[in-house]
Length: 216
Image 1: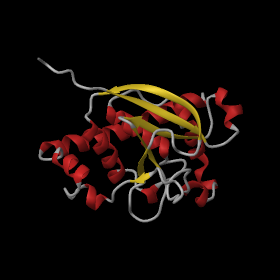
Image 2 (image 1 turned 90 degrees about the horizontal axis):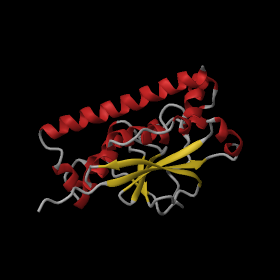
Image 3 (image 1 turned 180 degrees about the vertical axis):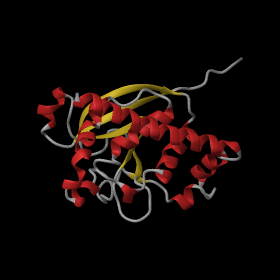
């Protein structure tokens, strides 16, 4: 008897970063933090120091922020191992903690790339529209304002689990990294790399297009 492949719902959890959102949300703009919930965990991206990644996982909706909206984006056919591997790999290759930038490389950029890799619908344009508009005047803003995120590097947030260092994630040691590493052998590495690159480029292209439409 053929078994049906299990599908996992992918939900975007969007949180308010500022009370002004109550006034601007209806106009399609605001200051938001987002995380991608899939297979019982929520994945997000934040700032930090050093060369480690800024990708983190935690229990769904445990961010300490006010939830604005949960949006079902579809279902992924990826296994739980591949769901985790996609997040780790995006963090290792594109979303380093030290590279966090409120306008150019934030949690919403990570979420856009991650849901693309999971094969579900893209983020609504309003989630990251403020960053897109702000990027036009980024040179006028203080650097510290741009490099500090709402999550990451907070020792009081016990529920958050920082991403493993890249040297461990690809060493083949440990229970979870061993299984993920086994799936990257041979041609799988090349296909994953190509898929992640397309995901990031497609997400950024959509955001640029949405920014252009919003300016009209």
